[in-house]
Length: 213
Image 1 (cartoon, helix red, strand yellow):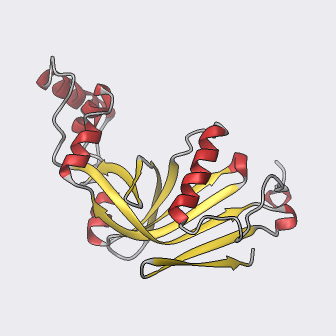
Image 2: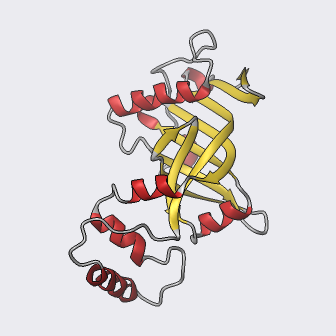
């Protein structure tokens, strides 16, 4: 096995300059996100979501971005899951996107609130039926004695909603929206002299600064 210290990569695909970026970071994010889709980056909407536990410790996991609405980043989950409980208690979070193929990273900090029941229901019922059943069956983050318990719950839900192609949304399931107040765009550059542009919300406007790599 080689040394971890010997693992390195030179970045040289793109650059990032204050004179050419969008004034609104959400617009800039959408441009980069579209680039990721066009470049066929695997799961371009995969993002690391970091939350704060009851005792103040950070917790993170990968979730999927499911929309950008009214300048907020939207994702869905079980409200009774670990992340749901933490977001309800501490409605702040950090998001991170990394598109290795484009040598780009975006980091976001913001405040969190639930989306409307109508929005959550519309998205839930647009999902494949199997995913709807999975959301009903899984007591997310709860301890299970074995997998058979989960499989039996799936069978129970399938029987309960037999013949229905669209299921009602479980009360414990829905969306969150992240309103950003801090967004950093990172573009890999040669010799580790990366481009870093930081947007910080200032009232209704955004201040833009270049950070040292």
